[in-house]
Image 1: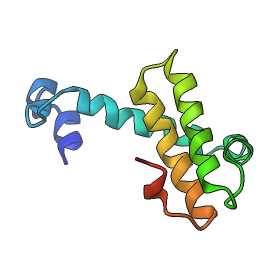
Image 2: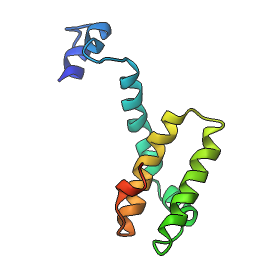
Image 3: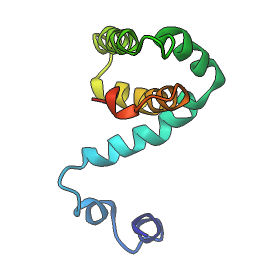
Image 4: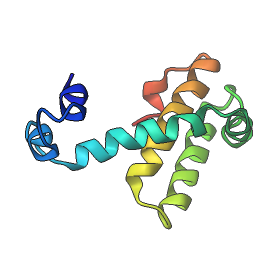
Length: 105
């Protein structure tokens, strides 16, 4: 509803964002929208399957996930990494019958 009112020109961008405590919230939400197609690509699913390993070694998968995030975070801000990794980790955990909450902490 907010986007419709803003797009129609009823309110300006400043007024549309006034309800949020921090304008960066919109940036984070936009990152999740932008990253979604990349995280759903078959190529990424294959990379994740190789990188995280099998469900037989869940702790090793957590170590691998952590190592990947640490490596990338030296070059990229943490927010895009979280936006990128969240759907990937959730899908990997669910496909292996594991609780995603254990890997998203």
